[in-house]
Length: 174
Image 1 (tube, rainbow, N blue to C red):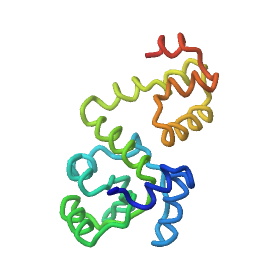
Image 2 (image 1 turned 90 degrees about the horizontal axis):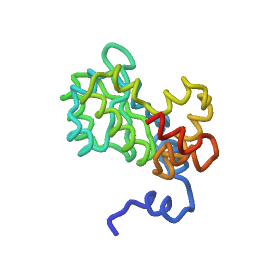
Image 3 (image 1 turned 90 degrees about the vertical axis):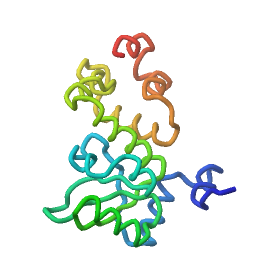
């Protein structure tokens, strides 16, 4: 089928993508992360073109120190991947695990930030606007975003389905 065992297990519903990431991380003695696309420094994204990040199945997350960058992967990285990353980023690379879905979603969102002014992009986020207007709490948004990683639904659809926001409130916020 061309799918990895973890992808098949996740698709059949036997385990969540997060549980698979946890198991792989434990097997390879790496930490597990939920990538925060808005917390990634833009300079890291500029140093590693999106096409390269996608090809290698990685996402740079943050600087651990002056010489080290933390990079998320959804599968054990090869020595070639490590070498290419260190060449492009000019830093020592340490890896952490994330579910495939979370990694792909965070990568799309992170690199989208390069296309527009960061401040405008942050202001345009639906969840931030709903929190600012008192419709949602940060905890409610975080729970909905976690669900979004699993279901791939639009955040507005999740909020309406869970009864956290009326459809007209979502439409107005958009």
